[in-house]
Image (cartoon, rainbow, N blue to C red; front, top):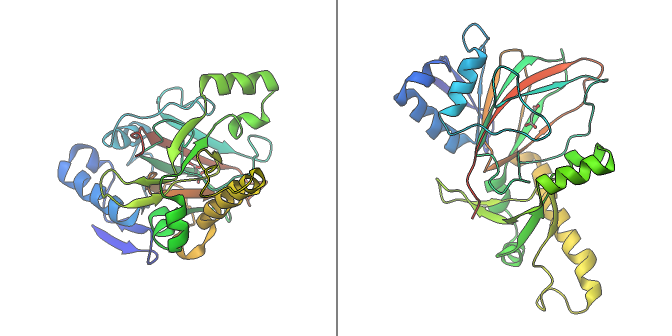
Length: 283
Ligand code: SIN
């Protein structure tokens, strides 16, 4: 196995292995798992369906934990847990944003395994950002300001926004807003992670005498702080950008990263398949 770092802060390409072999090998799986904790996102090429079938994809991801079901995206009819992210100009065109998968869940995904089935000749890259680094590089006064802050995240205002009103409300009823710490702790490494993304709607406990003299300080104070924190994901020094080819696979630690699929490829279609792994409740 060869591991080549792609940037200083995040991302490595792993060559010389077949992911299918990690399904049955504890040693290989453990090695991949520790590389994941170190590099946050790993890339593997040439994992075609002959070598790494959909069943292998599901089996490999399931070694990390049970797979998620998605209330809007559904999953492959024959492979529960495998979400088909198939996009073209006519089907599912939408604007992307920086996000950690499932931040609207009480236990957002631990990670995901994403395979490229078909991609445009050019465009359609995905960018990942290291949110451990984003937290570490915050100014000290911001770190103390956000210590202990909690934020609300919801699916209704994101996936739900394009739905008819009643369908949107039903999605919200089935998946009510959740509360997470603005700074979470990585359950395996103990690192601190800046933990707000585009599913985050507002801060929940900003309105205290320390932050707010009069009511008018609350807004835009809380909104501006959240916007500032969300903008940290856009800093290139914390990012890696991957140019897809068919049969490439990405494995990421969803607790420590956010990602953004660049939508610059219309009218070419782009087909990806993702297995999201159930995570724990952030603390
Ligand atoms: C995702 O947002 O989880 C999928 C990323 C991609 O399609 O590149």
